[in-house]
Length: 566
Image 1 (cartoon, rainbow, N blue to C red):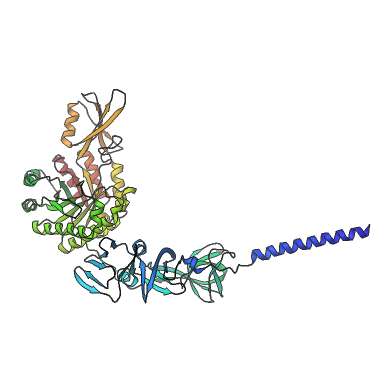
Image 2 (image 1 turned 180 degrees about the vertical axis):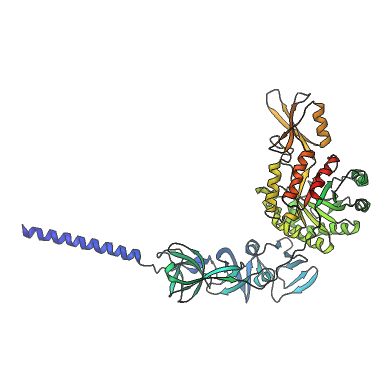
């Protein structure tokens, strides 16, 4: 019996030993750091020896660069998206343009020479290189206009760019250590660091710290491997550009004047007879007429003289309302933009008006770059000639973010909110043209990007009379017309209707059935509603108020506005 038991015990013991060995192996394996190394080419996304990886601040980006001799080049898209958005590439003309507060810099591709407002200058390297559909800018040239520093590393080629300055946390390695791709001992090794090497601390977690090495690897080391954590201030000598603006020492009280022909110009004296407190008039004189940048003009020196004799500055308006004009095409062409700006400046000088008001509406997203470049270029010429530049914008919405109000607020003198058209012709439902929540949102969203003292809030002197027609089949149709204050009051009186104050919109509201059997709705703009909007100038310390348009108002309106913009 004993002879049979011994082999069984031995077998059990052997099984236990094997199991323990297996467990021990797994435990050792679990807690033993891997020696696997990640391919640096894979890490930096390098696909060929001519590429140069870009590490921007503390991020390896998808964009690449390359070395040409000792000159480093950066992908234009990386420059534009991370470093300096004022570089503008015109593919059709094969030129890069950069605007400063006072100069338009034009750089032909493949050249060492460039022009600064028609003055020729040169570098000892090609500034812009084109490779197929890729455009690259010399890092040294970008550095002239951006507070950035960079250093180059080899094997693989990579450029480490610092462009954010201020407080940075550093730490030192207690001993030689591996920097891993992710936090964990089983993550592959990116690079090795030596004892006392300094790393930049990016993020501290429970057990691991995200760091960046001096040579541009971003990975993880265990917290216990770091010592002497400290915060240091970083900076670089650089003279930031100063954008001077022509800002009046008083609130702007502007009214747009719709001018459609020479007779409208001649009627100015009559049209402004009832004005009080207005200090700027903006006639709708200019419109882009074709994709080559030609404009139509109704500019009139006698109009300007009449306005100025009545203490009115003239800020002439240009629009893009011609349906034959492709806004994207005309604004993406450097030659077309230059033609427009030159015509406007020449007219201002010739006719003596003080400002230009840009009213480009329904700007498609693919026109965004050309649009803001147009504003930059026009701002340079306005600044040099002492001409006020104001830009009209709709109330901010996600679909108009590409208007780049922040940049407008830097380069232009005034940014005007068209605080109306909340509901417009073609709207699916009847509603206010400019309810108070809509107007306030427009102001708060704009001053989040633009200094309040540069913001002018536009108010409507018109309302919409909405008509709801019921068809024989029971369906309804909605239509509207824009009417002025007096016409609105006359409409209510003729229908025996009195409007009632609506706290939600801060407007008088009425609805009624007309003599034609149709239902009507109206949200009135009058002394009460305009006063509520005018109060916002003081509440938000805005640069002033603007009104669309001259002729839709009652003379009593001006006394109301004057209380808040004087």
